[in-house]
Length: 244
Image (cartoon, rainbow, N blue to C red; front, top):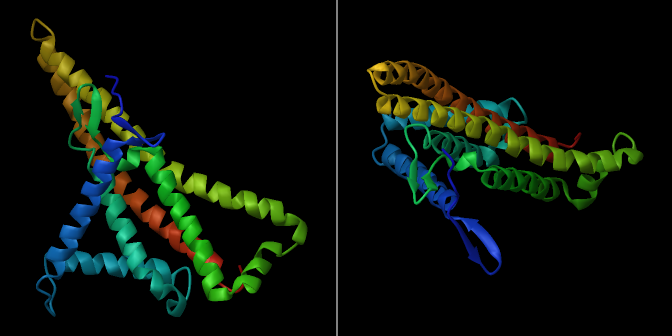
């Protein structure tokens, strides 16, 4: 089924209200989880506190594998926020979708290329900011001339390519998963409308691959959150290290 997007124009710019709403819900869920996990801290963590500490350890290992802790420790909060937010955002569109007046309102915000490319651009810009901040403008600019000065145009192209690949990789995986789930849902719904009892069988056999694909989509969503965060740390390490 074709769905439109709830677009609103403000000062000549068009904004997707669905993406804004779902991004806010994703951030709100992460915020609530963190508040609940840290409300009553214990020496022997359990429940949400144990889960949150596991996330912190996971991101610490990412940082430790890309740069020294003295430099990379400042990115711990960024990494934890990214991996939790992206995972929640990836999951929102899996259970169901909500369409009002043929406009899709409830979906995964990461199924919107504008959201993922904006996140990717923010990460790349942030990596340049910390590169200049930690190395200094002069030392940082020298990195673009290594190993050979005439490779500068390729270095510039690489920055745009990093932005595109980082954003489109996340978008493509989540969007494709939601499209397939939507097709399976339509197949199952169509089955109930069929006659002579064949619709029940059609719906039954459509629900099996849907459940399997939902389970696989959870795995893909988790992996994509991990990859995005890991690549963020790689980009940061590449910019803040003295031998980049």
